[in-house]
Length: 157
Image (cartoon, rainbow, N blue to C red; front, side):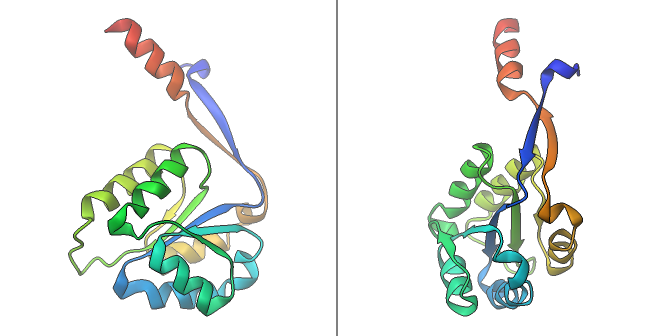
């Protein structure tokens, strides 16, 4: 891959953080947010419907709410990742309970991976992310220049 096929994306020191939790994990996410409120209050927060509402009510943190996960909230978060408007995803998932919207969750995880967005699926990973020195400074991500890749692919088909 040549350097011209790569593009630098900069995460500002004030991050856009998505908060998501399956039903059996919502209270754990709320407790994590309370514990980390002094850090989170310096960043922009959003989340899927019920989670965003509960985190905001229990912590006093402003959280922009999207739709509930099963009603398209996971896709809304994914679209914002594609648009460069989400820097970090904190998603306390429930690995022991089947989720009816599992394909949506997998799509969200995939798009976060494609766009090199840090994603925490449990408390330990969330703790490592929130305590990283990168939380309060700019961070550069190097990604493929997807527009160039698409243009080149179209020429070669």
